[in-house]
Length: 510
Image (cartoon, rainbow, N blue to C red; front, side):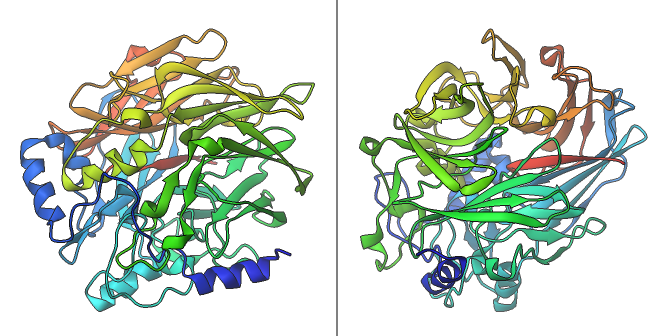
C-alpha cells in the first residue's frame, strides 16, 4: 500500500535524479568537449544565443526604466519571473537549459513607472556548491562526477522554473521537490515550504492552478523509487485540504495539467524511464528515458471532492509541456487545450543543443495548438491545428470554466525555435491575432492581467518580456488583450539583458 511516509522515505533513499544513461543519438558531446568554449565561440557569430549566456550571480537592479508609449494607469503591481540563470559556474557549463540555478526577476510597476530587480535564488544546493568551490550535483541533463550522496530531491533543488503567490507567501517553484519560500521585500530565499510534516521534500508542480475562489490545485511526480503521482488540494490561505496518490507504471515527465469545475486532469506522455540503467557510470537522468509511442498517452482524471476517486482515459501518442485551460460539458465531456508535439525532439534536441551554441529546429518536437475531448467513460480524441503555439495562458477568471481565448507564443516557421510572435487564438473560429516582434527578438511567456473592472474575458492586458539581441537588452511590454496585433501599448527598456526564463505571475496591488 502506498503511503506518504514510505513514498518519501523511499525517494530519499533512492536519491532522485542521481543520473541515468542516455538512450538517443543526439546529444551529449563527448566528455572532453568544452561546452563553455563552444558556446562562447558561437555567441560571437550568433547574437540570438545571448539569452543563454547566463549571469554571474550578482544582484541586478535598475532605476526607473525608459518607457515608450503610455503605461496603463490601472496596471500596477509586481510582475515576477523565474528561470535558469547561472549557466556557467566554476568553469563548467550546464548541458541542458533546465539545469542552471534559478533567478527571480521582479518588475515593480507603480505610478506609470517600472523598476527591475533580479536575485539569484540561493538554495541549499547552491550554498553547498559555493562552499565547496565546485559543482557537486547532477542536473536534469548534466552529469557531475564525484559529488556527495543525494539524500532527497531538495538536495538538487534549483528553484528555477516558476513562481507562485498564494496564502500571502511568495514561492519559487521547481517540480521535483519543494517550493522555495522567497522574501517578498528582499527577494532572498527563506528555505523550503513544507506542506505537511510528512510531505517534506515531496515533488510539487511548477504549474499549480488557482480556481476563481482562491482554491489551489497541484500535483507532483516522482520516478524513484517507483513511479507515482501526488495530488494536492490547498485552501486559499495555504492550508492543505486533502492529498492523494496515484500509482502509475511510468510518469512520462508531466510538466503541466488542467482542472475543470469538477476534476483534476493530468496527461502522461509515453516517455518511459529505463530503470535497468540506474547503475551506469556517468549517467544522466533525462537520457535514461525512452520514447515509446506504442503505449499511447494516458489521461488521469481525479474527482476534486475526493482525489482518491480516479479514472483513466487514453489519447494518441504525443509529447507536450504546456496546457491552456479545461472545462466540462453537461454530459461530463472534458475539453481542454494542449501544446501538442509528435515527439520529445525539442526536449532532447534544441533545448540541449543551445547550451553548446547550436540553435537547431524543433523538428517533430514543434508544439502546435491542439484541442482535446475526453467523453465520460471513453477514450479521448485530439484535433491538432497547423499553428505553432507554446507557453499558453488564459484569463484567471476562466480557469476550469469554458473559455473563448488562449494566448501564447509562436514562430514564423513550423519547426522554428526560439519563439518571436505573440498569439491570441479564438477557440470558436480558430482565428489568430498575431504580433511579430522581429527576427532578432526572442519572446518569453506573457501572462494575462485583467482590468480592475473586467467586463469581458479578454478585457485586460498581456504583460511579458522579450530579449532584443541587437541591443543586448531585455524589454517589458504590455499589450491590449483585445488587439494584440496593434503593437504594445507601452514598452519598458532595461539597460541590460536578462537570461531567458520560463514562467511568471502578476501580483496586483491591493
